[in-house]
Image (cartoon, rainbow, N blue to C red):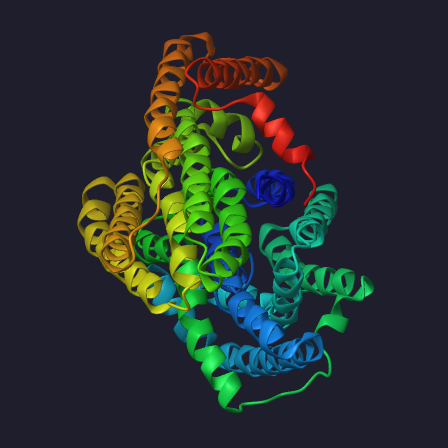
Length: 510
């Protein structure tokens, strides 16, 4: 489990780092304002769909169903089942893409009502329509990735998303060298999104992963209807962080540049959320499904306990680091070209509030697989819906009073609402199994993270406000490096983690 988690988190880390490079270049290319808000609103819509389908979301229904068919009827039946899923998902998404294109003005008006009556709405509609081909490619990509994950083959699925960011970075670099007009640059970049999806699909097909889903068929038989009845709620629930950001963008669209500030702040949240949360969902679902199906209570307790330790041990220091170092991180990554100092300050303030919700997002990723493994996708969906309502209600009030920072705080509150709902429901229904080792380690992990956060706070004066370029990078790198070193040392000294145990776990045969 640790080895699989490391594989997925490494691939996700590489993808997120490329995503930072991509977004830094987008900030330099488009800055903030009407063109940037329009592009990012459209791109956020695509990102929701991307997360809705990929990054572990479809695992919630596909992996347990595929494993059950293979166990009952064998490999050939499992491949036929997967072929029906792949064909049906692909056909449905092509039809949905065409339908969305026709009603795109209405969709953009719903997700960004502040654009109504302005040229920004037209720009966002054009950009979103150009991005739609990605949706048709994302479906088959996600099914093939889910099948590979079900077999414990995580490497290809972890690293294939790199192609998405590589394609966009190449396009942005060309546009920056060309000095393209902002509106034209956004238009061309939007068109590249579909190309990026095609590249990812071709990579998976080149590895002959399609053999896991044969023959390819479109079907709406009873088995498929039952599958989609569970898949759709699970997919929506797995994309909780993106739905909360959509809720924030709806309210923020009434404030100039607020959509852009929230978007760039959220990109920093998605780095630790991706490393921990995506890996958690990808690895835990097949692990817990096998344990629950076999009635192995010790295996369930072990998986849930290690997941909670990993979630806390990685999310908590990341939260404290992002809060304390928000402004220097934003200035280093995004303050270039059209993205100015005022934009950095506003983005950093939003980041501080969003970071408070990071532990909740990761906790959701750690708790949800326990429901998915029991074929329950409705409970996570209801928890996501509750968090969405809480976020919107608070954002209307706090957004009016505090702007983008108030909306960010509302998103964090919505995440905690969802996490607590899952915790209460799981405890009452089947009880989350936390073993003695986890009960011993968790308080020590919290203490180590608190000391690390205090150290970072004490060193914030080392970051000179007037520093630029290499000096800014070196100082921030030293702060982060020192924080990681102290945190790792404290985990070892307090007995919360053992480097030797981790190395031994990675060396054990699979």
